[in-house]
Amino acid sequence: MLSLVPIRDRRHMSEGELKHELLSDLGAMIAREVELDQLLTTFGLRVAQALQADRATLWLIDARTKEIRSQVANLPELRELRLPVGNGVAGYVAHTGEVVNIRDVASDRRWTPEVDQRTGYRTRSLLCVPIIDARSSTLRGVVQVLNKKGGSFTSSDASFLQALARQIARALDYTSLRTDDTESGVPMRGRFNHIVGESPAMHAVYDKIIRAAGTEATVLLHGQTGTGKGLMARAIHVNSKRRSGPLVHVDCTNLPANLVESELFGHERGAYTGADARVQGKVEIAAGGTLFLDEVGEVPIELQGKLLRFLQDRRFERVGGRQTLEADVRIVVATNRDLADMVKQGRFRSDLYYRVRVIEIELPTLYSRGSSDIISLAEHFASVYSRRYEKRAVKLSSEARTALTRHSWPGNVRELEHAIERAVVLCEDGVIGADVLGLVPAERVSGIFELPARADGGQGATGRRGENEGLFMPHGLSLEVASRLYATAAVERAGGNRSAAARQLGIGRNRLARLLRNDE
Ligand SMILES: Nc1ncnc2c1ncn2[C@@H]1O[C@H](COP(=O)(O)OP(=O)(O)OP(=O)(O)O)[C@@H](O)[C@H]1O
Ligand SMILES: [Mg+2]
Image: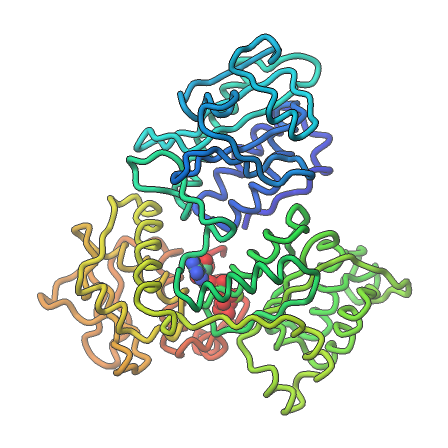
């Protein structure tokens, strides 16, 4: 998985190295929208540093209003600026698609001091390039850098920024920030750009997320597997005032108590055999940002007391250390367990339970979100995966739509995502039929995941030919895709129960989680 090294670690790097690294980071995160967010958050600093500029700004065109909006202004005092297309240099580039390189803005008629007046900043030199969708040639936005250190921007700076803009265009194309090909701009759904779903149940969730994001209170996200807990944790972070700080994820699954403790709080040299250096815990790494404790129900009871203390006063000691340290972090936790029940059974401390559920947000199951959300998610994933597998736009047949809305989705959005990915891989004529989906209607849920045999009994499709014959896959899949499909099938067979699926596969839950995310 891509991790963005903090900016302070790059000081020794040359300009060429910085540029190269930034381009390859962008390349690596394409198609992973969550990381797009992460990248955009640090984008301003990274681009500015690579181009020896003082500031960098990304402006996206709002497809509906045609305003341009600065997403990452790199100005802590102002989160978002809006300008009509055509206004100022960024607006000019968003309108014409030209590259503009200005040595001294005072002598350029396209320059307007409006933004400087609003930000109190003084622009001298400026380089601005368009973000253009390669397939449709429509404009999506612009990237702009300001005030080159010790001079003005060169033509090689301009070529670099254009290469970067091409990568951004590709990245946007893989996300929900895209329109149909004929329209310029990107659809802006405010603060939940990468989250699909307009059902009342989801709107209630968005409202709670926004309210929670405005506070420092600990949030408990509760929901079945695959309902989007990870996505919502990120939404809280990126909508909070800590958004420019780190979001650090700790998966508390299946780790013995001592390992969870050192993962969280770090350890001193010599704390145990093999601890040959001091290691910072995730709470320290998350300082200034958000710590996301995933599967908090799995924290071993022996460690729950220490976690409680940390939640109460943000104080902790590294394993093997005597000094008490403090970390300024906001905490979000997630679980698919019934914590109240675990408290009754004595497996979860009640004081910890009350601490973590200051704000509790329940994520609806996919089935309960209704047909319209199921279909819009299916279309979203069909479009994401047609691009990823470089197939022409794959559509859903009306039988497929019916099958999708009748299925009970025990694995929720993740199951739907994988079903659509598999169908995109398998479908031959650009249309996903009900057969390649192979779903069992809700009223007949049996936990059987395998696809039904094709009517013609042909090769090349997956199919369930008999109760015990298992999952068939076509030739030509990469091992990576095949293992993800197989792991997903196992989870779905287990009715969404990951521990049971991991047992059946003979691997640990962490390994299973990595297989499902495909970063193994
Ligand atoms: N509303 C949504 N819109 C778009 N994608 C979604 C939505 N909800 C979930 N997803 C996608 O579905 C997958 C599962 O989501 P996520 O990992 O956040 O679920 P989870 O609740 O954390 O699951 P688990 O408990 O199994 O870890 C991810 O790929 C995520 O991007
Ligand atoms: Mg998760």
